Structures are given as structure tokens and as C-alpha cells.
Image (cartoon, rainbow, N blue to C red; front, side, top):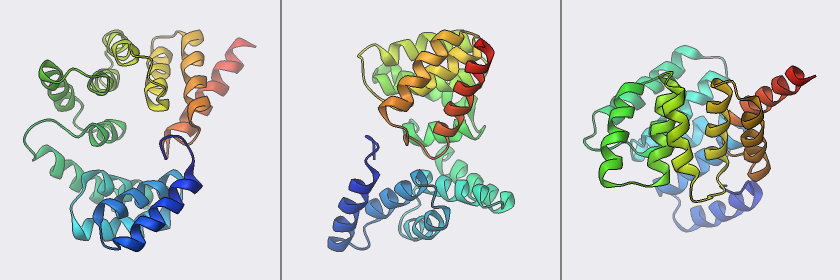
Length: 213
């Protein structure tokens, strides 16, 4: 999934589920795969099965995303609220992917920024800087966000989500050239890196191309 090879991922997950049919981790991974394929009916089916076993916040959020895509915002809000309560009630740092998901849905940005800063003091790694960068961006602190995403990219990791975040931060700062560079890199590395963001990346790239004409 991380490299965009969704068919291969589906085959491996099918094998895994044939061995452990009720393992919530496998079901959660299949839910994520279905979201990357925009198969929202299957996201709801697999997600609810996962949640019945373990209340996994990211899976709860994906089911909410599925209901949004299917035109049921009230049902989606139920799941997003459940996700937020489950995450904010936990001690310690946010799971990075869950924190990013919450930021993408306009939730708990100040709290995530605070926890990301605290965690970086004892666990300084690129994905901690990425989470802080995205929290700063969502709070309108784009200059600070640029400095943090630069730290996230300093090791040269080829991760489409990192490039996407960098591109959107540069777009917010008005640097069209750098925004185009990072967004194009994101799509080149993995055009299916997220259920929603690739569509946003393509829209921004189209807009940037029109601006340069």
C-alpha cells in the first residue's frame, strides 16, 4: 500500500485473513486498502467489523470518511466524534496517522501541536516533525510549518505524504514553484498515497498550471 501497489497488497491481505480471519489488525489494513480504492461500502463493512473487535481510532475515522463520501454527513460526524473522544482521552502522544487524520478534519489542532512538540523533545524523528508541521499549517502558522517540514524531509525519505504536506505548505506561503515541485514528487512516488489527498494535489497542480499560463 505504501508504494501504491494495491493489487499486491490485496493479495497479501487475503492470504493473511485466510490464516487469521478475525485479527483486527488485518481487518484494519483491509479497511485502509478499501479507502485507498475509494470503495466506501467496503470501508464501512470492514471498518465496523474492526471496531467491533477493537476501537481503533483511525479505522473509526475512515468509516466516517466513507459516510462523508456517501453523502451522509450526520453519520460521518458520529464516527469523527467517536474518534476524537477515543484519541483525546488517551494519555501520552497521538498515534501519528490518527493525529494527521484529525488535523485533516479540523479537529484538535492546538492539542496535537502541543503533544507533537512535547513528543519531539524525547523522540525526535521525521514523522514527529511532519505531524508538528501539519498542525502548524492547519493553525495558519505556515512559516513555522515550513521549518518543521524541512526537518521532516532532511533525511531524503521518499514518502508521498511528506511531499504532499510540503507542497501544501508552500502553496499556503505563495511559493508556486516549490509547491509544484513537492506535489509532483508526491504523485510520482505514489499516486494513491491517501484516500483524499491525491485529488487535492491534482486540483492544486491544475490551478498552479493555470496561474502560470
